[in-house]
Image (tube, rainbow over all chains, first blue to last red; front, side, top):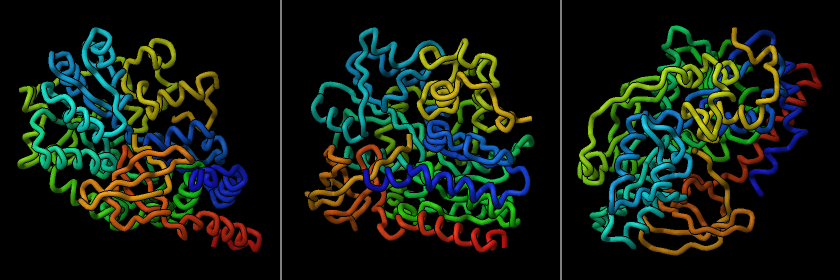
Amino acid sequence: MKYLDEYRDGRAAREFAGAIARVVTRPWIIMEVCGGQTHAIVKFGVDELLPKEITLLHGPGCPVCVTPVELIDKAVEIASRPKVIFTSFGDMLRVPGTSGDLLSVKASGGDVRIVYSPLDALKIARENPEKEIVFFAVGFETTAPANAMAAVQAKQMELKNFSLLVSHVLVPPAIEAILSFSDNRVQGFLAAGHVCAVMGYTEYEPIASNYHIPIVVTGFEPVDILQGIYMCVRQLEEGRATVENQYSRVVNRAGNLPAQKLMREVFRVIPRKWRGIGEIPFSGLGLGGEYKFFDAELRFDLAGRSVEEASECISGLILRGVRKPPECPAFATRCKPEHPLGATMVSSEGACAAYYRYRRFQPLSDNSIIG
Amino acid sequence: MCLAIPGKVLSITGDDPLTRTGRVSFGGTIREVNLTCVPEANVDDYVLVHVGVAISVIDEQEAEQVFEYLAEIERLSDSGDEKQ
């Protein structure tokens, strides 16, 4: 496919890897923020092309992974009610809550449906006026315009039987949270290209300068990722700390203005709890103003509540890049995609699931162990 | 989750900006895509689509940038200037 295949070219990938090896003079730790990038890195073996000086850490950019337990519990509770059709992206169905997941609700007769787009959930709402249709609106800034558009269209159509269970998170506050942890080791970031397609990258400029850390807006194919790493390593070696844009075919500095306008109309910035990390101020989006009418937590009277997380899962350390999946004692033994202890094993973009799928039979190489 | 796929716009329908829709081909598989956020998109453009909504029009010239950049650093490497 055009604009995909050429960025998977093995020769270009090896040439970028060679260029990285030529410019690197000492160890550097770089974090890719987005789970989609983590998946591509492990799937295509991008990390195995890198010189031993470069360590990649996998960041918290998997919305499925960071959705807090209490929200999964609320989803399960709503989906279990009669006369409800609960709609969601497929990844969310196996995320374990306190007692069960959405797939087990479906197995015991609940009407839980996987949809490709929130706009498909709207269609279901129009076709089933006697039912309450709830969409599990998870995601980062990339997904927020689509979910905002569903709310705007629902309002325009005066749909009374449609609501959103919102768990939206934002990338820049998570990057700042990682940088402010005392055990932070990250020296450079690959920012998530599709988040920046929507938001642009002006938000990252003060982070790069305040924390003196290079940030490279990066795409999702192996050649993109290797170029992003090369640009980041060049900055680190030269002592620079600016925001650069590797993914210029898709991202511009200001981002997608119509999409941002939709988000501003529907959402307000609120504090959010991240699974495995805790609450981060100003790190999420919630429905605002007249769009609160579409808030499933209010409609089903489920606001508030807090739940403790299971102790054995170390996904919090994994999401912050402090540990890698094979270092968890439960990895591939008590915790597998079929029976996950935590969300990083559930989502195909979760670091644990990516390692389980592509790396579980490999010993840890020297440069993948974090001392 | 933030997976987004490039596809070619085959046709566009709808005057209401909120429901402006394109038929988009993803390597031969055709889907309807909401084009609200890319008012500049035209037929034959490639758009980047995430959960049924186009979030960017792919810039054809910038798409070459990766390979031009690579050619440039290879040239610098051959002339021994890369680290400067």
